[in-house]
Image (cartoon, rainbow, N blue to C red; front, side, top):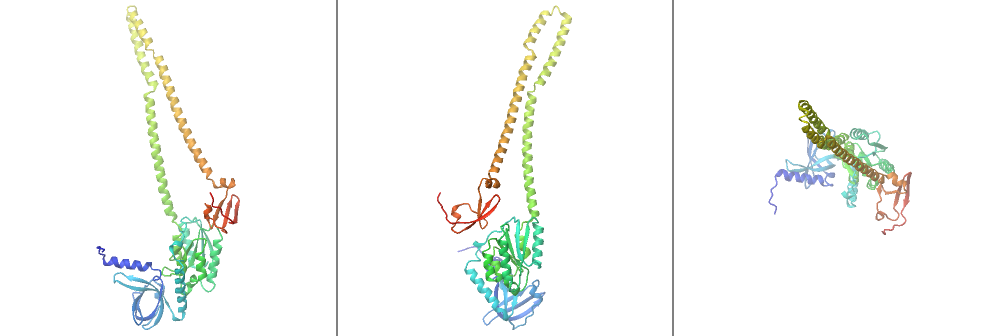
Length: 445
């Protein structure tokens, strides 16, 4: 038994989350009789009832339908809504998206039947959703060339990620000819390998206006598209079947442009941070190397023979002065002492020491030169190794040697196990591409 006690607000939030995740309850059709209809502060409140039950309904003042809707108690209506909760009151209600006249109820029944059919076939399953490239180069858009949707998409993409190219297929997005026009747009953009993904959609409207995005052939075309597809139809409260079969659903065309592109300003900030880290790393490296050089310079100063020569010269000059003075005072009496001093001077001749120290200095210089050139050779060898490795992975060089790259539906073929009889491959040569069909597969090693 679970001993944890939940607060009322926690339970209410949990129930609200469950309702929002239920695909059926976010876009449901309900029929009934209107009662207790009223407007307050721009919001519309009423109940929808039948013989056995009643449910509260709400339309917020910022929704387009709230400006024109007029109902009376006793009216029999059909409406499209989402089931939501009012957490503070602890009850559920219908957020009404559209009130439907009885004469067009067949459209919504067809919507529900087709929705249930595709759901049972697994077309809505998450496992079929493909990721949208995070750094697109070329974005395909299928929508009306004259609507606000295309302006919002282009403006948002150019603001966030101006280096991306936008390819627009001008499609009909409303009426009987709209589904085939949208299908044609998807087929055209799918035929271009350079397109990264496709955005399909339009701006807001009534359910009838948006109903072309519930066409069965269009839904199959979206599901089987070679390129990932983002569905961006209407406003946030609208949920067409294209939203469920696409790889990503955007609540609005503007949101689609934001979801499919990174913010270039954020990328620049991230790049600048990385550059700062690199600069600090190099600064620390040079600082440590400078400390090493200072250390070696101090060593050279300690063993510098010039200092010793200078000291010995000073001592020699002093010694000569003393000898001259002594010689002048008593050159004859101190001849023997002078001879002894001369003998001592010969033994301590600085020239021999200078030669020895000079040889030591030369040896130190040689060692330094050897180490320096050895270090340079090592760095040159590393550089050549890196150049060789880069050259080995150069795609153009590999293709010049006769190798090719094979792709199927934009995916590189890395193993014979990925091939099937009859599969169509695209072969990428250095000077062009070719198409081949697999006749046989040998999986032997």
